[in-house]
Amino acid sequence: MARSSGNKNLSKDVQEAIVRGRINGMTNKQLAQQFQVTVQAVGQVWKRYMINKQVVVAPHPGRPVPNTRNMDRNFVRSSREDPRRNSTDIFKAVNSPIEPAPPRRTTVAATEISPFGFSALTFFKEELGS
Image (cartoon, rainbow, N blue to C red; front, side, top):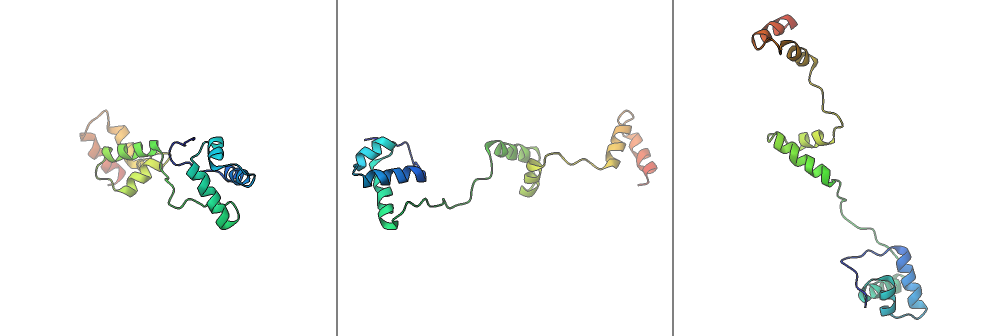
């Protein structure tokens, strides 16, 4: 008797082949060995066929998992970088293709004052009109 490893969702083609095999006189054990599933799985396919008079593959309910392993890793990394971030900010940081650019005023002041130190910061702020 062949056994599958864990839960095996059979495709519609395989289920139809199992039903054709049962109609042609094969046993559950023979079909289980041929399709590498359990005898109980073959019995369930046949039982559903006898109730519905057709092979039905039911949709799998539940919400699909939208996150990949790399996204989960990025969520953890982002939350550790700034523990005060909320879930919305973390999601935006992980899913945005490019980090948002800082305001131009901050960029200009930072690039021009870096060689001079903090004393030049007030000079640039006064010159920019703040």
